[in-house]
Image 1 (tube, rainbow, N blue to C red):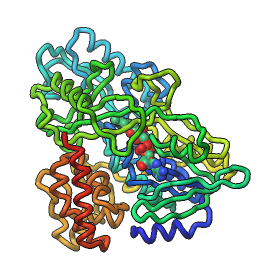
Image 2: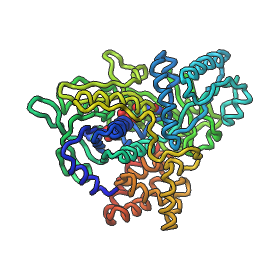
Image 3: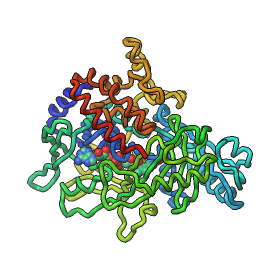
Image 4: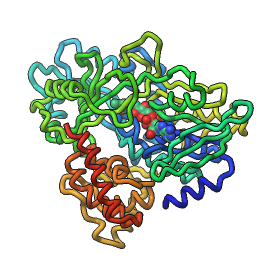
Length: 518
Ligand SMILES: Cc1cc2nc3c(=O)[nH]c(=O)nc-3n(C[C@H](O)[C@H](O)[C@H](O)COP(=O)(O)OP(=O)(O)OC[C@H]3O[C@@H](n4cnc5c(N)ncnc54)[C@H](O)[C@@H]3O)c2cc1C
């Protein structure tokens, strides 16, 4: 997938049916939907695919037990349906995860037991497994390191788990399979209008070289996540603000803190939300927080009080209290929540999505969740096509297997995220056995995955590989810094870069990785 070929395809198309801004869950979902309907489709992403919010989630494909508590039954039902669709269409990336709500008060088991039965019912035929009340002994059996003092028992239920960045890369590959063009490191810097004030294209800047291009499109979809307001301002500087940004932080701990395969759902935090302690890629992911921000930023930083909050809550539920020094990595993401005038508390803002078309024809889609990306894309592409007068074509994604589709893989095998591409990856190792070696003793990643990421998955920078193709920085920030020179050297060989490039990439990646250390 040489960059020069992608740029040549970009330059060769006189006018795109649909041009999408943003390569997160929402934009990539729109890209797959539009390309699968047969529209000529371009997606541009300013940084790397999933670099915004879409690599920083709790990694749950879920209806959202919390939204049921808030009484948003319609949102939960839609999300539970999408959860089932995603498992069917991407079984190599989504798997069934058991969660236990541990109960320390007499009323909790009946209360959560009934609530979770309703959750099962709302999932209908696409259910992931029935919830059940557990005895104290069974609860401790499933979560051996759960705090036993005053424990009465628990309720087990099922939801989905996934790798958010890997799903994003898979969506980009699916879009490519369908004839769409996805280009990362390409920012929209302006919108082009005709004499009637209708948007007819965009100006884009190559984020790696600074080269400017102008492209034509019949419709432009703004899926820039927390940055949609900036794009709306390019259309009309007087556009009202749509987004209320809210930060969420996660900590990553060693698996020994909760060695079983079952996740813990804490149903009521001190600030009235839920948090999860979830096994993920051989670690424990703890999150999240909800902190209202004045403005979004590209690389949000976890606040000390958010880290303390998560450590404190984790300590209440685990026999061994995690300390700052135990944190392998910490990261923050920003929710693109839809603003409601007069509402300051972001945790009570709706997680529904919001679709709007400006007078100039800019289609903006924001809000929602990773889990509902496909439905958001269906709504958006249908409306965008109608507005632009494109031939009406029905949505195909509900039954569209995603790139690499294959069933029956073991999610504990880290190569399972490649689905049936794994054979091609193994072929690379057969041709050059040294590429079968691991990059670091603390992480499972092989040298061949770096080569694969450059050849097949648009990786152009060290951060692309260590953050989004592999999850090294999230699983162990210090280990990712150690690996950086080796990974950069492998990339340089593939990309035809020199020593100077390697040195610069390693230096800027290490600076970034330091922000993942607690
Ligand atoms: C802490 C946290 C936990 C979450 N957990 C879950 C969960 O467990 N399950 C779930 O379903 N959902 C979860 N979510 C929600 C989910 O992650 C988001 O709804 C989703 O990722 C938003 O995707 P997006 O594509 O709209 O935004 P983004 O992922 O931010 O994508 C927007 C992209 O647009 C790009 N962009 C911006 N400006 C430009 C420009 N000028 N030109 C080109 N590109 C541009 C950005 O670089 C970015 O990559 C969570 C969110 C947070 C913050």
